[in-house]
Image (cartoon, rainbow, N blue to C red; front, side, top):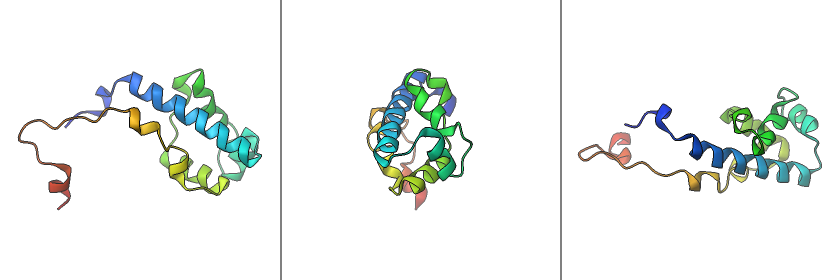
Length: 107
């Protein structure tokens, strides 16, 4: 199984930038400032700012799933709308020959 520390940084860079742009668009459409959205979501006042700043500095953005759910709730949208296309750019790993498929493991 591939280790998380072997995921190329370039993959996260693409996702972080797309997340930043998508969140900024959704936030502005809803009429929130960065600080107001953070407050409405019950997060630290700089959380949304840090996610959106990933457009320029990818190391700033690594939100938790819980933070994304809180932001989506505050925006009154499903969480998938925040990340609709971001994960399409992350390459899927191929299993080593003889490895069980994920569906076989879940069964």
